[in-house]
Image (cartoon, rainbow, N blue to C red; front, side, top):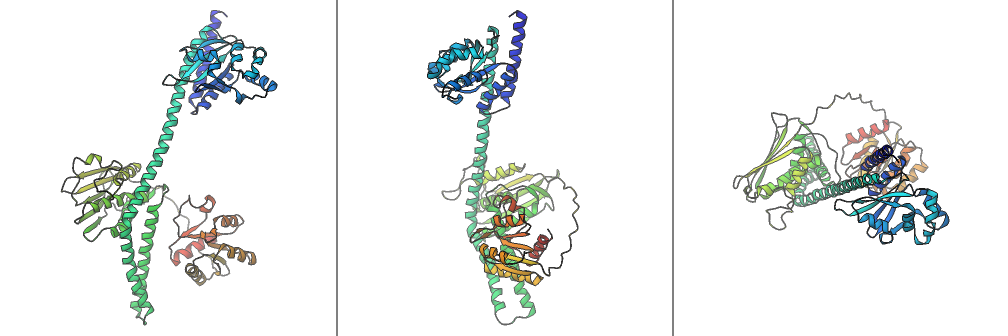
Length: 559
C-alpha cells in the first residue's frame, strides 16, 4: 500500500471510529455502547468483535467479522454464540493486549484458535480461510481507574501499523464514554433513591405531625358534636317554635359542614402520592390549614390570622402548603410552653411576590444553632418530642415551589419565618358553555348500590323526591340480579368499595356497553387508587348535600 493510500486508509479508519464514538455517546448501558460501536464500524466496512472483560473471563458481546465463523462453528458443533466466553489465561494475545498501553496487531488464525472453545479449536484454520481476513488490531478499553473493561478487535486485510495508533486513541475515547455512561447511570440511580428518600421523609414527618394533631382534633370534634347532639335532643323532644326548630336545624347543618371540612383536610394531608400543583388563592389555602390547626392550640397559646394577599393566586400543591403551615405552627407551639401568640399574616410585596409571615413569641433560637435548623433530624427538643424533620421538610417544599424561606430569631425575642412565592401567571380567558337545563326526571330509572343502609335510604329518599324511579341494592350480587331481571337503567349510582369488593371493574364494563355510571365514595379522590378508565367516570365524594347530589346526577344523565 502506497503512502497516499495508507494516509487515505487512516482517514477512513479515523472517520469510522469517530462515528462509532458518537454513536456510543448516545447510549448508556455498556452492552448497548458496545453494540453501537460494532454496528457503526460494520456500516463503515470494518469487521469488529468486542469482548467484555469480567474478572478472569472475557464475554463476547458483539461481533461482525466472526458472524461467518460463528455460523460455521454452530453448524459443526453444539455451541452457540452465547457460549463464546473465554478465560483470559487461555488466550495469550488477550493477555498481551491487557498488559499493553497501546493497541497490537495480531494474526487472525492464531487468535481464533485461542478463543474457540477446546472442542471447536480444530475449526480455527477452516474458519480463518472462510472469513478471508488475515490481520487485526486488538486494543484494551480501560475505565477511569486504568482497569481493562473490554477488548476491541478490529480486523481488515488492509490494516497497517499506522492504524494501530488510531485504534489506541479510539479505545481510550471509548473508555471515557463508558465512564461517562456509568456516572450518568449512577446519578440517575442516586436521584431516584434521593427522590424516594425525600418522599419517605415527607411521609414520616406527616405521620409525626398527624400524631401530634390527634389530641387536638379529637377535642375539636367533641366541641363540634356537642351542640349538634343538643340540637337533636331538642328536636326529638316537645314541639318547638318555628324559630327554635330552624335554629336547631341550622346548628346541625353548620356542625356537619365543619366536620366535613375537617375530614377533607385530614384526608388531603395524609395522602402519600405526589399531588398535582394547581392554581389556588393563597389566603384560602393558608386559612384552611389554620382551621385545621386551631384544635391543636391549647387555651394558653393564641392563634392570630391576618390575611392580606387578597385574591392573589399561586401555583401550589395545597397539601404541601398545609404541611408547611402545620410544621411551623407545631414548632411555634412547642416553643411557647408557657403560653404566647402565633401570628400568621400574608401580604403582596411591591414586586408582586406574595409573602407568608409566621411569628411566635417564644424563647427564640440561639445564634449558634440557627445555621443548622434546616438539617434533617436536627432538633433541640428532648427525646421523644420530635424527629427533627419539620423544618427540613418545610424548606424542601418551599424550594420545590420555586420560593424562598428566611428566618429571624434571637434569644428571648421569638422567631419569624418569611416564605415568599411567585404569583401564578394570569389565566387565559375561558368561555364557559351555558349549562343545559335539566330535563324532567319522570320515567328515568336509577339503580342505587350502597352497602351502608343509612346512606342508601338517604340517597333513595332525595332522588325519589326529585321524581326519579329508584331501585336499590346493598351488594354487587343483588345489583347483578336486579339488572338481569329489570329493564335497562338510565343511571347506575354505585359505591366504589362494597363488602364483596370494588365495583369499578364491573361498572367500567357496563359503561363500555352504554350504561351511564356515577361513583359515590367516602375515600379521597386519587387517580392512582381508581383504575385509569374508572377515574374518567363521574365521581361524587362524600360528604355532599342534596343539591350537589341532584346536580351531579342530572349532569351524569345528560352525558
